[in-house]
Image (tube, rainbow, N blue to C red; front, side, top):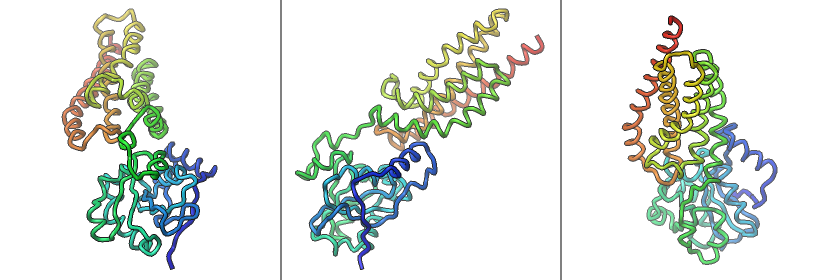
Length: 325
């Protein structure tokens, strides 16, 4: 007996709450559905077969885009990871696809031998191997599921459908997870910095973390440097300036060199933190490569480390100087 599960194009309130939880990193690795073959509405033997990951957001994005379309959805076990990342990790891959074709007895379900895969899954799948070992031909659909209804009319993707975009809305969605992940560490570090550096220093450190994890992805294309680290240095410098001025003016009775020292400590610490946070996004855009990421980390991480160490030494030294002055 062939096991085919049923699904629809309609998203329920439970589905949307699951999406919100995923965006906020709540139960992060549990947003998954059972792999296998699903019927979308009322398909027949000539209906198209779509392939996706078992991450709920990937599965739901696909089925909700196919409203009014009968078809089958073959869900691969990607361990609850989206198509793009799973293709890079190998879980959205050739062996897993062959396994699901075999276990679902797909040859007995449909008359044709065509599979529609998401374009972003291409790095993980060897199309020629799939055809040789299963008889099914891989066909890459558009980047975005919203273009599938138009694509199905001709089975040809326009250049615009092939274009990988990472616009403001896409980047904004990332910030929910980032905010939740940094909230507690940011509060703890802010309190610690308040004890050793005062209100301005505490606020500066919190803002530099916020800038690196929230502002950075939003402003990414607008920051005029070629890589993530220098973009982080640039953004860190911008957000540091108001705090440097405030700290400089806060203690007007101190010698000029001490006031400049506090400004320098703020600049070093804030730019180091913001640039380090920016490195988290090297794998989250469409214009990076593994070799480029590794090269950037080896080049700039030592610089960030020395800046952080220098700022820490400066912080301790300035406190001791003011204590015994």
